[in-house]
Image 1 (spheres, rainbow, N blue to C red):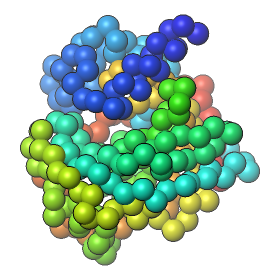
Image 2 (cartoon, rainbow, N blue to C red; image 1 turned 180 degrees about the horizontal axis):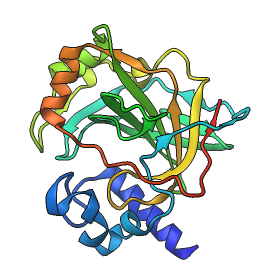
Image 3 (cartoon, rainbow, N blue to C red; image 1 turned 30 degrees about the vertical axis):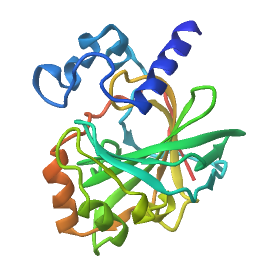
Length: 245
């Protein structure tokens, strides 16, 4: 139990600030295949048995609990941490599930998607990262598909932080987190997983929405130009079950 609590505290710190631990990347000698050896605190990247991302195959259809969102607080900052582009929010946006309340800290993007669904990779994936008062993590995930231009995403693209360290105050854009979500929040996959970046801490609640969000080809290109490929390779499911509603 002590090891788990230590890992969770490290992961919570990693959510709130970048630059913790050894330098890592998505390529070469500091890429995903080597994360577990770069820093002693990254051991779960190599040894963990419940790692994310995975290929989601929902074989267990159950009456999953409906999570409750209490969103409405605006985005405050849009920045590039060298691994992704991330939007931070004012306090007060919450997700409730399993009788526990998690506060939204940020959402960020991966191109292409990290998780696959029934063997399908998506052009982009967004992770809404939530943290409870006792350091537990819940991630709400949205997949993106090519389609019509997305006005919400265009506001972000217009202020894209293109280089590591770039940061913009976006309070004036009046962007609330619910504006990026699909209309159907009832249908989703759920599984136990990890952070998809070092320290790869486990015990993370993952909820992947089934309905994707549309963006135009030009909008995908704007993200790809900045992010390149920032997706961790798939991990084995091992003994886990993916539940779906």
